Image (cartoon, rainbow, N blue to C red; front, side, top):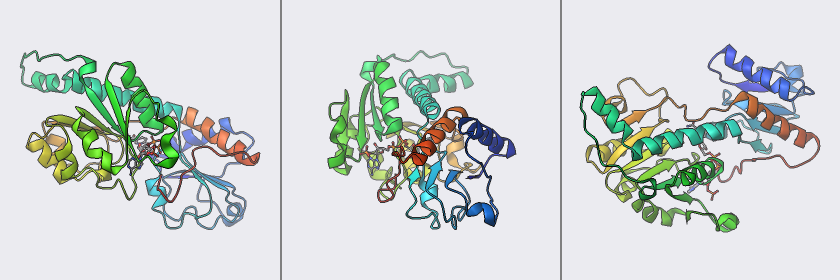
Length: 315
Ligand code: NAP
């Protein structure tokens, strides 16, 4: 079954066609399914479906998200508790996220946002130029996206470090070619060393509201925040106060607590905020459908399904 909230019928049809092409041996049903079809559905492929869409599917064996973040799915109390849930790790989405992070870091490092502001004032003012290895970038989150972004930024010459939850089950990459900071206690020191902080965390009980006044105070004075993850990580009043006080130099924001961002929100017109309409990285139907097909075939063959969400930790 394919269930979701789509920008329009065209978007749903594009996904359905890509899924049919990738997995022709499956019979696809578009939600809402009738009672007979509901009894047969084994896999639900979902894009933030309406709450309740996944209840009362007696043969359901797998929920496969088309989106990388599953916070809205997990918030649906009718999500069957015992059915495995897989999130999307799509090479097309990952490459798009790497490109957005690359653009943001390069624009901050080389002051291209400042030059855009200068142009609006017909102002000709060359600014000092730094080398990439003089710019420290901290990634919040070192998962599928954080690792890909780290790799590209290191290839561009930046000084990259990453912060993650860590723990006993997470030390397999201790030899990663970058500094890793594990756990909440390590965050202030990690923030104090960074010129640019990129948020690539999932939204969980622990990360909601994490970017608050204390967080911004721990950052280097004049450093920049790039939020490519979730708006609910941020205390907006604290971020605006940190920008107004010059504690933060700039914020590049792709995600917001309320989307679309309300027309009267201060972010729209703040001189040191760049607003994007949640487009940092979209799943690409062509590559994502192949990921879905791989997982459904693994399920059919009794093999491990990839990228399962651990419900207890929320990602
Ligand atoms: P992922 O592979 O699950 O990685 C999550 C990372 O966050 C892991 O490194 C994890 O630490 C870390 N983490 C989780 N909770 C933490 C905590 N409490 N403290 C410190 N670190 C914590 O996720 P992903 O695929 O990289 O995606 C990350 C997020 O990006 C998604 O959840 C979604 O919100 C966002 N996203 C946004 C867009 C967009 O267009 N703006 C598109 C796609 C995704 P461990 O390594 O120790 O487990």
